[in-house]
Amino acid sequence: MRVTQSMISQYTLRNMSNSYEKLMNLQERATSGKKLNRPSDDPIGAVKSLNYRTNLNENNQYKENFTEAYKWLDNSDGSLEEANKVMQRIRELTVSASNGTKLEDEREAIRLEVSGLKEHLVSIANKNIEGKFLFNGINTGQAPVDNKNGTIVVGASEKPISIELSKGLPIDISTDGTGVFSQAFFDNLTKLEQSLAEGSSGEEIGDQLSAMDENINSIISARTLIGARTNRLEIMEARLNEQGELLEKKLSDVEDIDFEKAIMDLQMQETVQRAALAVGAKIMQPSLVDFLA
Image (cartoon, rainbow, N blue to C red; front, top):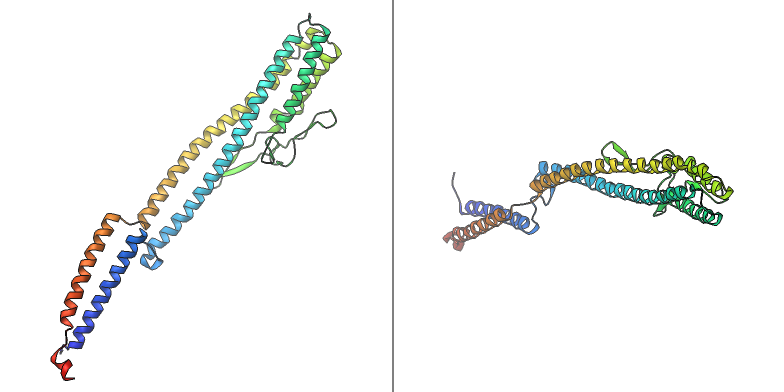
């Protein structure tokens, strides 16, 4: 086959074009820091990248759910800690009132304090965060305890709030209000208040210490459950963070370039491109045939 000057020129131009395209791709990678700037760069890698990003988005959503769960548990535990302090004070007052030597005005002072502390416990039971009541299960828009007419009525929901912290794994984060601030809980306080108002004997008032202890134990039990849930959340969160770090590494392996290698490849290709241009310039110099034409 006869090789003409035109064929040599076309071959040279094609090689220079390919070299230039490769140079442009390397420059784009070095500038963006990414191997994948379009799906055609690596179709298989692009599919992997999409899957990793989808999983990372799910992972980040679960992280937000953990933040919400911790907030709910922390606020619930803080409220119960406050309730426990109030009940401890009421127990102290019960012990003090059971002393048969207390004068009438001293008992009245104790009754007034117990009454005020009972109201405070109602406010704790009706504690809400950002408009959501903590101790009414899924009925977060309704207060669990009604005390408008001077008679305490508890209508707390037993159905807990659950939040998904892992795929297909919902976790209860709310405290059962009926197990802590139950009707019996407030009835015990009302009975103590009435006994103080009616001038019951010190022995009769002392008999109510067991009821106060029941109230305290219900609070302690609820806080113990919150502690167990918090520990479980911490274990699950640590595993979620590990999964997130692994996904980010896999995504980086697929998408991100090795900068040192990318710069070396770019410099090498620039050298190749300059050499190709120099060779092409010599090969494509005008021949005698060009002048005769």
